[in-house]
Image 1 (spheres, one colour):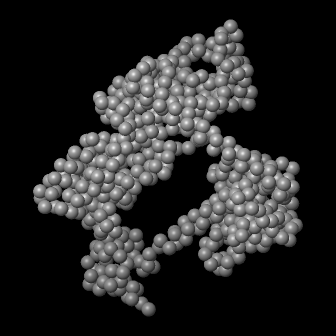
Image 2 (tube, helix red, strand yellow; image 1 turned 30 degrees about the vertical axis):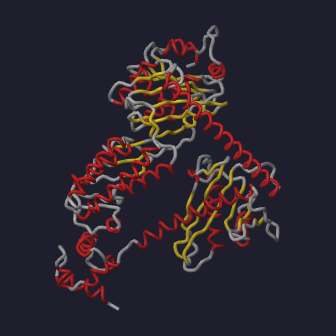
Image 3 (tube, helix red, strand yellow; image 1 turned 120 degrees about the horizontal axis):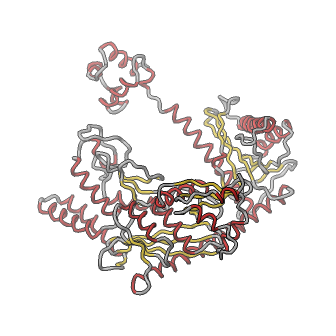
Length: 612
């Protein structure tokens, strides 16, 4: 069915439309209350279209559409499809990554506070998303100095009788695992944590002051001193919060700046009239994108994932279809939300301040990105000259070996492509032909052989999308002349037409094929910095795999070696005695006290633990 026929038969109902180019790629996703009127308007030559639409229409060769029951459903579906397909002409958050949240597991008997990357419908309270992972970690550290929240991942129920860990003894946990705190007392502390995370210090501090006074009257001076220190820390934090309104409302102030295909949106978070924080988000957009569309798209993408939506959101310009956005935001919040565009007064001044902050962040980002691009271009040019390549390498694969005195020998392959590490293409190998004594040379021979033999096989069989079918422009070997030598032997055996080099770790020397002596670059040479970054990532990936394998072996217990001791009896013994040392010290009579341990088995355990 050709495009014109689809245009002629479009329904008049609400829905979402997808514009496709000649390659079948989705280049734009939009919504409409009337699909026929909206989609056909793009192709009316008499209409005065914005520049973006004029450019986009030239690339449209096909379209698809999905009917919905309402414009609200279309709005939600549009947002989901944009996140899924990242169309060229839609505004989208830069970097396809998940932002962190702070999660409070209020659905548990004794809640935890932790950082997570995904918000689930599990009954927990979430705060975020945040763009600064370091700031989230600092917040959690600060929280744990104020409140003795448990940091373990145990499923603890009231009345548990485990042994408390070190955190309890240093005052960093109330030890609910040992039954040393009631559910109610622990819950009161979590309520204070929630007030802190909500930025409502004006409610939290008086509560703590009342508790401090009571503790002092009850002669609980240690508790009173701890509460005093908490109050002082919170007061110091409160002094940094700027009062922006006397009415005590919850509001978000949004501003943005854009240059070319990059935009920055800044959000100031005002809670109870105080500015408690801010965050910025980078968005990719087309050169011709309209300002209102940038803001509208951001509000959809941000608030769909946000843990909290305030009653009022202030923007620097009026948006199209504000009623629809307000209705959607209200459905997420559970009560009415207002989009405001102040024209004068303190709120207008604050919106202008947010816009200026967005401009500063955007300029810093552009300067930093420009520096990185220049350094990368220089690094690739240096590698091209060093290896006498016809063009700069765009894909580099690095190999590293990890072992402990010849045991659990593993190898890693990491991939760098077009300026970034490509973790989806990482591969790890258990080395099969080397065991018992360290032999990095043979381990390197095996991993390089396996990788490229598999790649050649996939190419012969026509598996273009196979795991190894894509070959690199450069192979980086972690090691010196010896490791490079065995890799070059594999290259010759398999008739590979690929450049190889090795980077030795001690002096950061570069070994090249056919050269007896290494090349030594300046420590700050862009090419060396790039090779070192990729080599270090290969080393990290191999070491992580090796530790995981070693851990699986060492996590076994001496109890696993005793005939008649399965997982259930092993768990019962550990629960009863606490440690292997105490089991070893126990008498046969004491061992019999454990459920499931017969006199005969107790004797066997005792003999096994004391043999030799």
